[in-house]
Length: 408
Image 1 (cartoon, rainbow, N blue to C red):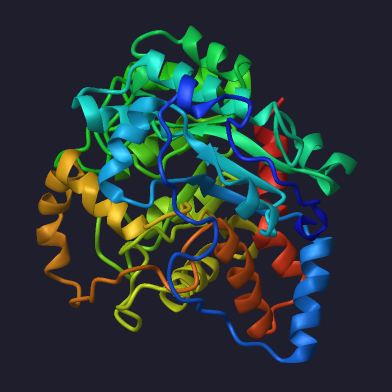
Image 2: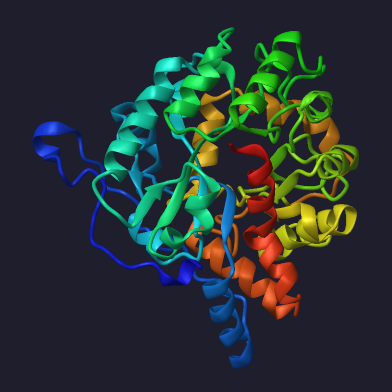
């Protein structure tokens, strides 16, 4: 249904005076920063894309629909300012009806080299939602009725989400507070271990802790969707077993195609599906690569989709592109110099020895931002003549079905 949204000229925080109220940065364009890489279609296929974009519920399971500075070196100062601009113009041109908007509170870690703090989350969430309250193209999503109801025809829905749970520390009640403030999905661990369990960068995965099991139980009771994309393998399996509700792997790929910890092994993918969960395919730079397609782009990304679909079936796979508006590759390079992911990458060198080499890209072809991803994934599925029923499932229907079991 994402083809029916109206256009508007609102720009983030325009209710404030940048000269007096905050520092202004020159931001990236909300279109493609690089050359366009469309999936070519015939006229009848183009018509089918338009029809499906109008009729299907389209949901991105993991994205960052915000704009970053045009100059990468200004990213950290921009994050410290606290006012992250939502890409309203870009979203108006996308097909997505709803996006899981993964808040950028983790950026605070970059500038201070400390763990995520409770106040980081409140700052990021409050700033973003205050901005969103001043326009009507994008609305915060709180229930499945918000996604498939009539209002979805007029507005894009953003679903506040967090990639890790370190900021709850040892306070289970913070899960309820986050839910009350609008957060509807939270990861167990963001690559590093925390009080709940191990992240994927840890050389030894201790699995879900006793406190982690209590947190999973509380998230189930509250109605908070659970994500294990950045959790370690054993922790992921433990969470899926412990949860009374389905679990998401919001932005991953198949380790059988590309042997790094960032991808998930077959047993974790299958366990997620067996519990009724959904697996979103990831497109952040240099993740979903394959031996057949070592140049990261729509074809390697869709090879991971095809593998996971073949493993778990059409009912348990979707898309979590993990894209943004700006130079995504440049941002990854900048983050690697400041965050512990640099050591994580080095720790994975042994795993990569069994994989073929790959060429670094300036951008992920066809998947550079949420707008491009929404268009080109649908175009690829139409080009390959997948059925309307199955396209509707993977573009959002599977996610909506699972959410009706997770959310109150």
